[in-house]
Image 1: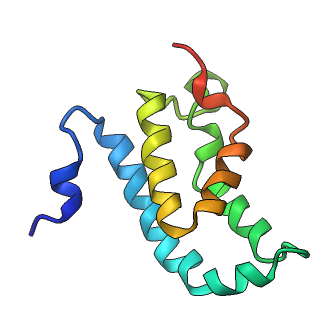
Image 2: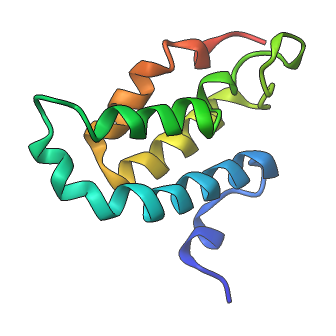
Amino acid sequence: MPTIDDFLRPEWIPEIVLDVGKVIRQWGEKKYIPVRRQIDEDWKEHKLVKPLMKEVLVDLGLSKAFWPAEVGGTDIPNAATFTVIAAEELARLDSGFAVAVAIGLDGRCYRLY
């Protein structure tokens, strides 16, 4: 059965970008949502946030998404659209976490092709 995402996503978005968005959403529902309230209390130690950021940036591969495949990246097509989809899915979890991940990407998403 179609969901709201089926109606809001334009047809020109590459399938791999939509798939990564789904992976981020599933990860968030499984890993982030259960500890979301505890993260607010973790503002000083960052014991919960650091492992979650590592999972998103390294384990899910967001940090290498914008690099060409010949240097170990995944060479995601349409980097700007990918950035928007990833930020949207992360912001559904927590807007502050989404900003922290975006900063962790270090501006590589604006590399010109």
